[in-house]
Length: 404
Image 1 (tube, rainbow, N blue to C red):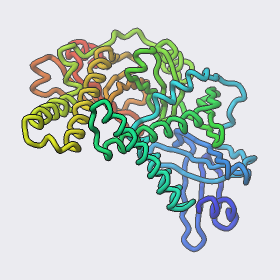
Image 2 (tube, rainbow, N blue to C red):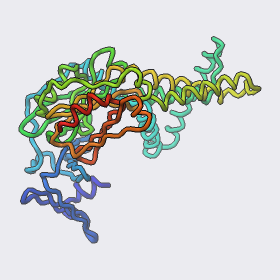
Image 3 (cartoon, one colour):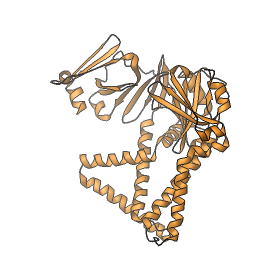
Image 4 (cartoon, helix red, strand yellow):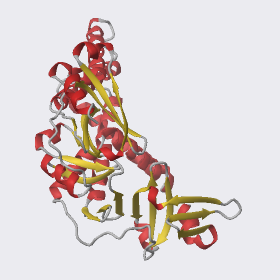
């Protein structure tokens, strides 16, 4: 609908002007809505060309700011003054790096939601019969899986097997989609912009404004084994598989974040488990309930047993990953830049940003942290974002933070 109104019938519904360093976009016929965006407020500009848009020689442009975004459709040949031109030369990662980045960037829960949405869309466009056939095929696979497991004396309810099969197919579908999206990945820089280009069927171009956000790495157990992690900036993947040395080069060469030799600050071994207190509680409670389950008369409740087993595995796995990764996670507080490490799910994130975009910091210390000589550091940065490093030693942290 947007494509029809704002591109095919653009001369009737849209008025677009560029003047005095701002974009003025007016949409509508009877009820007009006008959006004014100063170009100095832009932090990211994306250009997307789906196969349909390419047929009509069109492109979808989105200008992001810290407080919102502005969407519009342009002709493929249009090059307004606010739209940067991507350089012809750039850095091209190897295919195995792109494959690694797609693997790490594919999340299980997001994949399930995405696969379910795609199935629903297929049902609406093509017909409910195709949707029912796909669900029936997944259910048949789940039944075969249950029968196979039963042969080795592992009883799994069909509904649990269906959930496992659906999750597996969802992850594979999301992974392949992500791999196609990252294919043709190219990275370059010109002036104050960092450019990323990728895609095969749908083409993506992104221009990132330097020093408006934190540069973030996401490290999982697989990343720790291979010594590489994907790098993100403003929710956009900048490089699919960067080593620690390459990450430092990206900070300096692309984003102008000055390297410093500030001593690293780490959570002491005694406080590492506290980073995973929630999954540890889930693991302990689920284990206790599972033990009670076997001593009770509910042995026939296979679904309940499956749920408890899943909770034990999920809680234990998340806690184990968190403790191993946080053991080696480091933060640092230099004169020109800050680096904070924190856990989220089964991954540890490292956010690095220049002091110039930091809008304040909060130091907090509970009664329990006070007795152990630890406290938490929360940094507030541009764009209403915040990052929190927990359980850092009070002595070393005060020496570094207190000077700034």
